[in-house]
Image (tube, rainbow, N blue to C red):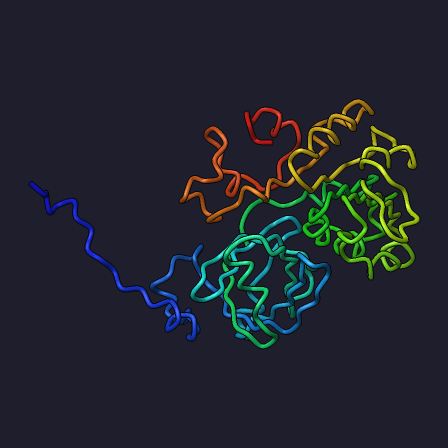
Length: 305
């Protein structure tokens, strides 16, 4: 006999009608503070590669635009009405209150839909969420920024910070590795980073093709090109998790303490508030306690990478 207590009624879902309207975020009393949404306009879209685009967003409400603040390394939840939301690391300067930049890779349902929208479209953001890179702690030291693939996107925020406070840092090196030259991101800023910001750029590709004249191999080979003072250096590593152990273990052998190496586990992000539990590693919510961790903490989080 069918027990009606466990029968779920059929639901009528009309995606198209919802997708054509903009969500109303004005009822502040009905929304948790952490769930506060900011309506935004996409003001510019730059195609970086076949799989990545840079989206420039502007919060519509003037008051909310002044309220929204973030720190380098934090992320936000980006909502495309009718399709859902995704966690995205912020790739812009936290001193720029006019625009927010997000580098997005076409990978899933929501990001694929985002690749079809035009400038002038409306989206919403929540956040910012998570921990940040300790920029004040790194001041007065040498800094290694190490990026693999899309990992250069979350590193743009600390790059902007260093540029705006360049006199507070010693030598700064950006080590950037990708599989193929066509996957290099933000190539139009390479000269700016080196000539204007005095950040030494080292790029390497695993499989050189076409007219690539630079270095080829894996990213750890770039350490041969720089002199590292382990007692006076901080390292920030962003990229695929498989890269963390390779790079951080190499830095450990050079003598850089694990508590002065920082990695971002932003690929584990889901809801941003520890509700869905999909980012849990043991008893740690990487979206709440992270995504930025020092490498010592990561080594004590079983299966974090």
